[in-house]
Image 1 (cartoon, rainbow over the protein chains, first blue to last red):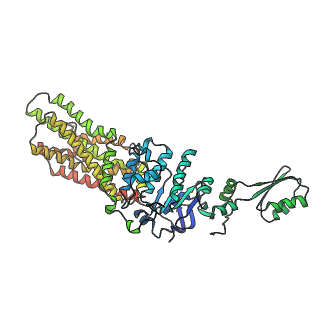
Image 2: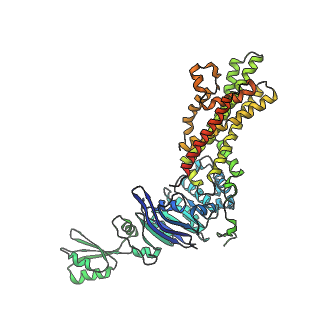
Image 3: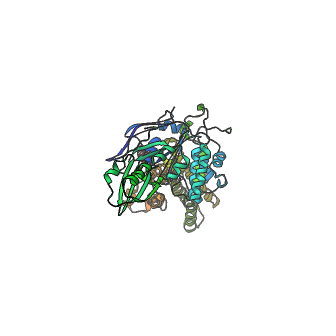
Length: 302
Length: 262
């Protein structure tokens, strides 16, 4: 049975289409990063998975159940971005309150320990730092021992240390075989913690593959030479060239096979000062998710 | 792998009985609400202080009349405290909505109806606390009433505050704001005036008296004092019933709007 099965999911708010015909299948045990810029439709998709929003079209199944049933059975839990905590509860009371709502809750002490906040159990929520509050949300999500854990941009606004502590708690937990899906706009988080990356732009999936595959998509090279009057059309005709740019005497070529481009410059032109560099992942991410980019679906799952 | 595996037997999973309504949550909730000093002040401190002020100015002389006034004021203050208690209990919904706690709870098996049920019980506990504390202060400072009058006025003051539990819920579902009680407080003071809480209603101008008959506190004040002074008219009882139904219905409508998926 699939952990997540989204079929042709569409969500419209008036004239705005937040999620557009999105289909996604996640196997149990996968750790999936849901990566995209702000406003790409990540949170809307997650809201539909959690039953907080109703799809305009399409369907959601979590371990074969509609979201509301999955929630009632404690199959799915979520760590939301902000809010969702009462200031005048202590950390432990928040967990005990939440635990009392489930048929089979893990003991409060256990989830506090696993979230790494056992030491601040008696602290008022109002006095907790952003990172501590986020780990409290994580502890709350662990109470039902859910089979699927969803994290919506869980480290937004955290400092470096907070992010590291949070992810080490998540990583520890993931090693136990839980299915995890997290939305993020931090590429390094997706790279470090996911074994599959789903890239979303304007409500549609633009790339979906293993972390390695996505990195390959982004592994283009950049060839820079000094050359007057280059034959731009000839350059564009070379296989794998994605972009040709002129800056004064410089010509910059983005391509997947830098050897072919370099050979062309050396054998057919008077180009000098050849430089070959890797395109960075961040730039590739921007390229893939930019409004004008054409969808690039990796072979693995498209 | 440790003993606590991630994939428990599916037989352990399922909806919680009573939609998640349970004593642990209720006790935690009541404890939490009582941490709010502002709420405690209006439920416990204010009614007692007001009672003492009245007693020292109007009831200095001993005698049946002074005794009667003391009891009258004590009951009125108990009603007022219960009203503030139940209203603020219901109005915590507003705070919880503004903080995203309600949304968080929607990610748990807690049924919305169980949530409202716990809110009503929390409110009524606050109301009971107000009545008990005011009556205790009254008893200590020498209010005389027949034992059954103590019992009935106390029970009626408490039970009729249900109308304000419903009112608080309506406010809570109408306004998702953390400081909602700052706006509702003055409104309650006005309602209390029409309930004859601060001065007997028959001392107000006739026009205000006529208007007061249609306000939510009118019936509550009369009914709660009835075991002492009599005069529980059908209108007063009807007023409580009608306002409770109106507020509860309004709260239900707002609640449905709030929990509807968009």
